[in-house]
Image (cartoon, rainbow, N blue to C red; front, side, top):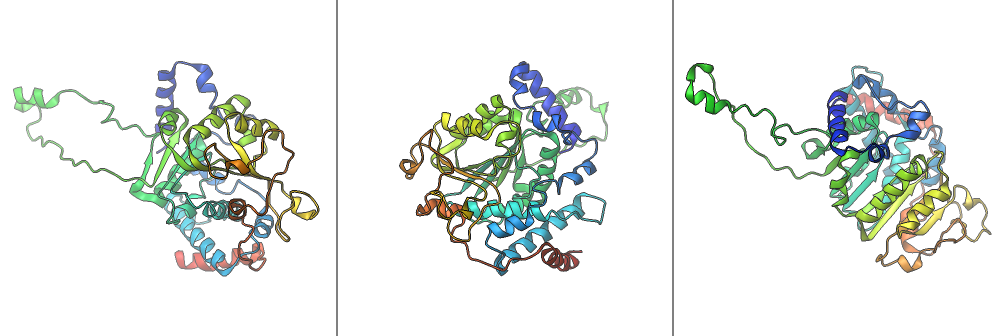
Length: 382
């Protein structure tokens, strides 16, 4: 998938929709007004997006994880080695950007997802740099990880990452299948039956149809009808809820509620840093019937007397949201609209499991220590 192919597919979708108001819902308005790279002229432009998320949060995420055990380090080094192979395959430079904070933030999400017992099918809205795939592809409990992206630059980067991670079991729905669309029909064989001299040495092309069993499917905004027809065990939307404008937020909240199974979980690690208020984001989720099991503030754990205090020694890098749909076995334990924030029941097993209250503790490792270990590992990759 390249920029020209993406734009052709998007242009045809807009022509088919014939509604500027509908297409406008999905414009990356916040990115466009803040000077973010939303369109690219070359695939090499995507390099700057690899280390653009969660800047200067490395130490915070190490603290949230309770340090990094040897097992954590092994998983992270595996992910960075795979990331390096991806970079060296896709880009000409041998100088590899190392997204320490970005990768650690996605590892934290992957660990939280492991706290959800039923996670066979996961849908993420707005995967950013796509680094979560390096972890979820290796989680044996996840059969399929699908994702939706509305920003061209991020979509193209995510597509590259997932082709590397999932190989032939990745399907990109922004790509046009020209054969399926019926293009190129000139009835050549019929004409040649009448006149063999059209191409005297012609040999008809041979092909075989192979049915793929995907482990990951990528949806652009103009294919959301296909997403809405599916049902997922987990829906996650990280660091972006407040970056939706209010109309888009209502739309995507409705999508969350539509595709989430009755026993499913909605998880958001960080509501984002956009212009839409956090209260507006929470209201949009509750307006479609989702209810908060946990809304954990960043540093609430520092005040042990607070009614929503975290277990001793636990802190969060940013706010985390866990919502449940009607029908979930724990739905009766969720908070009602108007409840004071933050919300946490430290005795609730699902909250403990997702938010990592019982994660194994490890050494507090520094950026330099982790970067040095990555360097040693990458020496073997090259």
